[in-house]
Length: 117
Image 1 (cartoon, one colour):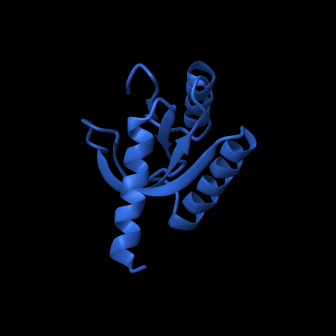
Image 2: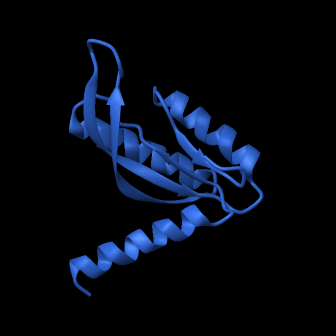
């Protein structure tokens, strides 16, 4: 399998999860004030927490605007986690993902459940 096939297969899998009734989330532990090494360490810690909660995940390329609309606005590319939960765990999953976002000082967490994003 070449890289193009792998990327297409991965995108197809992301789409399957996004279209399902299973809750999903996109979040990261990256912050602009940390260097790449620190951010990677923080993301590994977050990934371990997600696994401990019993959820699956995989890494994706993310993008965010930190401090949007302020003089300190920064456009950042960051490694993000795509988290998948079992069907029917919407409320518990949502609160856990929001708590992780707060723990890692995030301005936002994208969560999609049966009611939408």
